[in-house]
Each structure stands twice: as C-alpha cells, then as structure tokens.
Length: 95
Image (cartoon, rainbow, N blue to C red; front, side, top):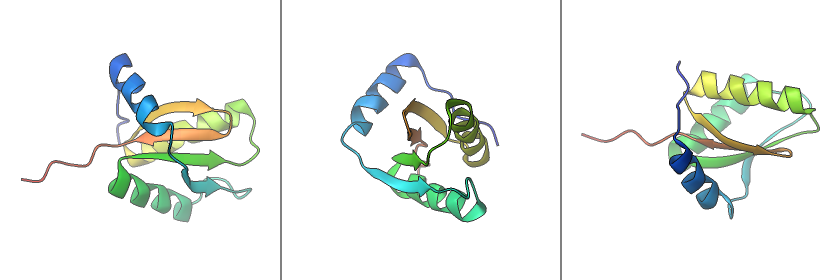
C-alpha cells in the first residue's frame, strides 16, 4: 500500500493537534507484530491521529519501524520525537 504524503503546512497543523495526545499503542520488546499493526490500524480508523510509543530502540530501528507501519497501513508519519511516533490517516469520506 502507498504511504500518505503530507505538505509542510499539513504536517505543522498535525503536530499541533497531536501535542496533547497520549500514546494509544505501545510497541514492546517483540517489536512490530501483526496484532500490534491491527491495534494501530484500529486506532487510526477511530481517531485519524494517534501516538505510538516505541520501546527502547535506537534511532535507525525507530525510523525503519515507522516506515514499515506507514507502508503497511497507508498512513503518514507526522513526526518521531524520542520514543514517540505520531501517525495520521484521514477517515475515508462517506458517500
């Protein structure tokens, strides 16, 4: 699935909206598993904008994990700050 691309203005707005949020999913030592992906997908479906806490990984692993999530779930990585990953996927328009 393709990842979602954001403009700088959209990214700035999403960062501001994400600031007060708490992480809804936490990745443990097992890493990115199918149940974790499903939980992130549920969070994005119901909230559009979520935070994910990544457990004790180095920078390269966090960035790789963020890319994997974005690719698998067709969402955008808004930002990665420390161990917190902010993801966005708009809710599909209902016809």
